[in-house]
Length: 610
Ligand code: HGA
Image 1 (cartoon, helix red, strand yellow):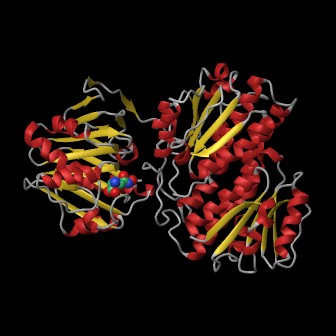
Image 2 (cartoon, protein in one colour; image 1 turned 180 degrees about the vertical axis):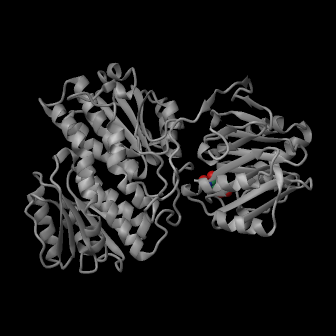
Image 3 (cartoon, rainbow, N blue to C red; image 1 turned 30 degrees about the vertical axis):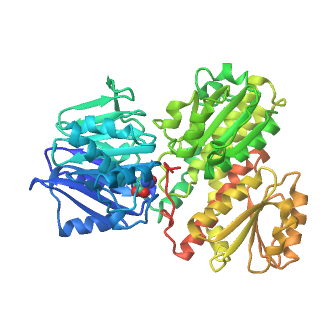
């Protein structure tokens, strides 16, 4: 979601701030701004609704040149996305940018108004600027005042502050929203993600929860949540910087869809022996903990939640372990009864998803056996705070609509299922060896599914002028249908719903007419005949059917029925394979509709607010 960049240097930092913001654009935002302590000795800002390029254009007309500054891309939570609400927010001679939400902003706003502060925005963030200004009057030093300020804030924040009265430093605070310091020579930087700073450094210091930092040209000082001065380790960036460009593809999303064979391969690397999963892939204590697991609770949001729903079918069917799956925003706020020896599993691409992270933190108080994160970012909060981890190796995912993160999460969850079953001895004879073999072949199968690209592109034409679509699946294909409908909603803005096919006649069938295409995934399993009957129910009401069917399922094209044959695959792995054509379908429908595929309206990557 929103991004922060800050810099203190001896050169003009405005281009560095702008480049940093551009690198964070993929997260989704609605406005952008920058505040610079200019060479004229004044703190000045420029803010624009819309894209960073608009801010850049404005700055080309009225340049801000200076050696100290902060910048922000905002994804509005409090107050409309407009210039007045864009960050940085000013109070007196200081400027603040903020990621997160201040929950007690109303109370603070009233108090500050009582003290004579005038608010010029509708944001929760502005209270931070005024409160800090107020504290600064008494306390004099910016970090001391910031420490006093954050004590009064409830909620989540990553904060960066500069002041014209102390123009040699950027000060920062982290609680619930990540921040990283980029270390340079005679210059230092700050950002909400190290990606924003890869242009200027490859050495980073990650702030921990509750940290306050004082960042100057030649030094960095950090205090922990108890106010103790602490050292944080400087880390060389290792994760292999992947170029943030689209290569031959028109959109990041299409590039990422096509990367799936490679990233699935990478996610499997080092995790399989001849015919078994290496349980230690989950961490050194995994075998010992897995032996005690009698139940699994999965918590996630959005696409990751769908991955969790597929895993429930696998865990119960293959490993015989009861499994519950819940969206994090519900789980974290309800009274949960925890079965003894339950493994708490979170799934998140970024590892910073606010609701999932909060659910993990709550779970620690609830008596779970242990926590395990399936995550794509090695340095994320979720990974740091979990007992066990399986890192997916999807690489950077830039398209807001998740694709390769989802399929690699599924691979991770199947590895988890097999590991639990292996350690607990609950897998049927030969299942693990067969699935390990099938997993090795999976990248090739995914490549075959991707080769259907142009066939799916043609089918997409059926949807471009439609307003509603139904997705159907049975068994583990039901969550695949849910994921397919989510993709279509996200990027083409077509209303799409997913149903287990057997539920059709209990209500949604009433919606079906020739204006409501129905998409179905039909692997060749024991539910196929039942599914075929469900499809007849649709055809009988004039509904256009698009069926992705196993080449051995014996389904053929007919009046109003478009069958796209899929390569045959082991039934357990079919949710991974059948995801591919549904991703391609939503992509091509969105292209036909001309929407902003990589940055769909109202959405953000890495949802770091509740
Ligand atoms: N609450 C602030 C910042 C929003 C944010 O962090 N979005 O991801 C605002 O609405 O300006």
